[in-house]
Length: 96
Image 1 (cartoon, rainbow, N blue to C red):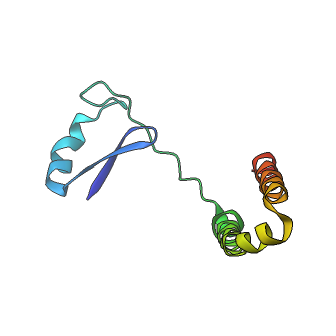
Image 2: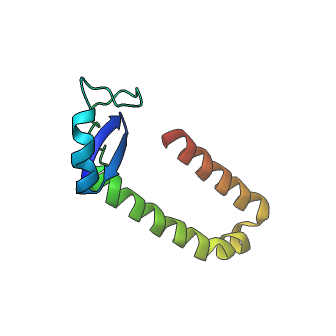
C-alpha cells in the first residue's frame, strides 16, 4: 500500500495500482480536490515512563483502592472515606 499525505494529520491509503495512477495528479503540493498536501508530522510517543510505567502504576493503585474500599469505609466511616476520595481526586486533578 502506498500512502499520500493529504493534510497534516490525515493520510489516504491507495492500492499500488491506484497509487500509480494518482501519483502524477499531485502537483506543487495540491491535491486534485484542492486540498493542501503535506508531510504528516511524526507521531508523538509517550515513551517508557509516561506510556508504560505511569498507566500500569495507576491501574494497580486503582485496583488496590477498589479492593480495599470496603475496609476503609468500615474503619473510617462513610464521611471520612468520602473525604479521602475527594482529596485523592483533587490531587489527581491538580497533578494530572
